[in-house]
Image (cartoon, rainbow, N blue to C red; front, side, top):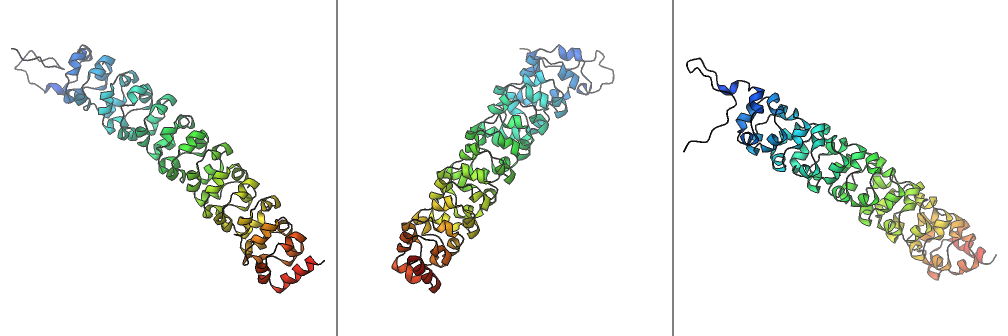
Length: 386
């Protein structure tokens, strides 16, 4: 049998006696390269492919490109690869794409990335995705972005994600957003987050949510805030909560309000506290009520104070009670008067007592009366017998 013919990139010299130069060092005539069939291209080694210049590669048909073995493809220099026509890059098979080194992937330009269909783009590993330049990423269409797997999205570095246009970010799906890390979410702009649907916002994991900037939090629409789960609300930092406006607080559901930690409640601005509706005030726990500062209590209006339940009033401190106006104290029902703790009674002013009605005055228990100071007792007697 005769050995299989080897692919020759340069014709042999007809004169054996002439001084010779290594054949592989000579540029290959374009016509000779063009004459290679796909089967011959498939037989090229990485060294032979590495010896070809950009004009040689440019002469390859899309079938030729698809025929290059993965081993040979490793010999393709980054400068050659970045100069390939978009149609040639698009002709790479999924196996070939997966075999590219991160250095080769980093050489791809935006037009080349844009030419790869979603099926072939799926062949990129997380490491390869992480190697793409921000310029290359700019070539990704919305359909390509939404087709990326969760693993691929997880491979994006924070600066890569931050480089995406808002229109590209809006193409991310809920499942993709769910895998974003704190660093990745933190790299997104306020405009980027504003494009998130309620489902997408609800998909952000609690650790990542804590990385949202205060500007982004302040820019969230009421419809977006309502989409947050109780776990997400509880995961907000006190700094983030402190940026919430009264309208944002007012849009929260009672379940979300109930999920606020004591520290979060303390961090609310007095303006934000005024945004609480009566239904929201009524669901505050004893721990949440106790966390309110006297300044926050003072900011509450009479409707909010009137919404307090007897158990909530029973958890008020003397300084909190003292922060209420006489008109607000006058809204207390008889069972609410009886619920005031003996320690908190020190916060009642004589004007507060004087402003109470007969039924309210009679609601004081003997234990409460015994804890009043002399001025309060005098005010109580005067009010009852006036």
